[in-house]
Image (tube, rainbow over all chains, first blue to last red; front, side, top):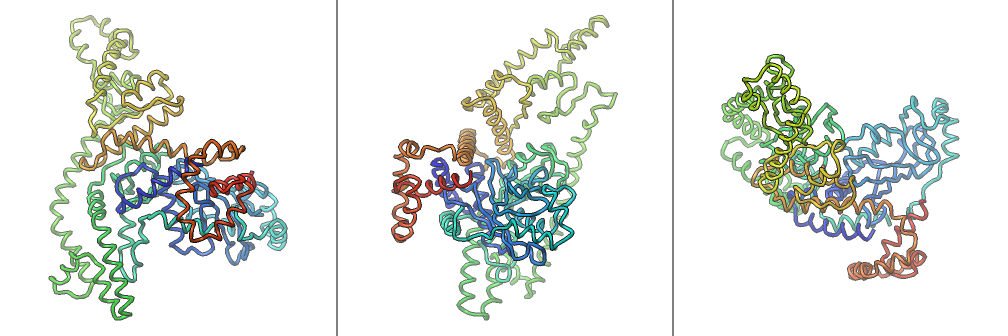
Length: 180
Length: 423
């Protein structure tokens, strides 16, 4: 991790000096792109989604929050997710997991892994944290019941009351103050 | 706390992005303009912009990296490969101009915004005009049209007309180009069996009779061996047949020739490989370690690490080199600069990898001892920043004391704690 902090420091300076996007393209291009995404996320107000690096020293490890879309069983609930970026991001998809247990047909209730095509074979280099979070938010309300990771949830989907009961049984509200 | 981190990060990193400009109600089109001149993969202003068949445009290095993983356009998923890449010269010059103008326009727009805030609503209309570049404003004055939208239309259409002749000429030229590139695209036509075909690896045109040797030699052999066939015109039919077979199978005569070519190729690549020459892709699965090392030596690249690292290094080098060749010649980086870029890229990879495996550091005390000098440096660097928030520093010290038992490197200690609770 000492390597990270030292490798981050010069790249920030580079950004400062190359205001107009000069061709220092390969130098810290991943960190550049990640800081650009962070900027976009903070500047644009996307309702119900947010994400930040967990610590100052590692831009490759983020924590995010998704609020359940209103009008669905997930309305009023908030879910914590973790985002790990590979070193060849954005040419490979980040690894995303639900940290808050999420009872959902396409989410593994124990491990938190997500079954979503754009996070696997349909990943594209122009997707961003923002587009992922928006997709995840809409996945909450519109699951793909054809290929469920959680068959119980897929079975209960059509009976909202039972589904909600299961959902709330697993759900832990997040405490904002605590780190990690 | 998480938010504080992000905030402090953003304060430290000055990331130029479209949101630097005021929103479109006070500076119409500026954000969109800045966004339109940025690659959607790296979010930077285009470097050597390249267009695909579908019309989408990306930096050369970005799209080459994508196509290396998956042969489709990242935006529309239409099939795409490196041979479809065409330089987007117009975009390149637009980006170049914008890179020069950006800071100036940014300052102007900010000034106008400030003035608007001071003047109240009265100033807004004035501001909208003021935020535009000088040239446009001058045009608005000269053509006696006052309404902004009208000016825009007039400007655009007149430019269109004046350049239409040029456009037609260009397109004719383009058609010629495309026709000449498409003629040999039918290599399977029976009448020109010896005609050049496109090498699937390097996309160069290679005579059909040497295509096998060409591929076997990692895209080195370009000369046709038909000259040898011509000299043996007096030979019997049987001899000719034998020759044909030797061409195909690469028998001893063929391989000796190949060896000669190989030697020549090495000489040539030693110093003469110019910066606008494209490097062929290499099929790494089919070459031996020795050849791979030769390739690295040829370009004066380090041979540290193991085979996987060599392949990664050479692959990236080829991409960087070819992307560099796509730049306008005045913007090209030297090979020494490219080598530095490659090194920085590898360092970045290593850093990211070590970040992911940070739970490896189980013995915090030993780790700390090994990195004391660096920690001291970091603490020293952080100290002036920390001064004003004495309380926060104290808090941090308490929580981190558990991890290291010392006040060194708070950020690192947090990470350690994180990994413990996660795993």
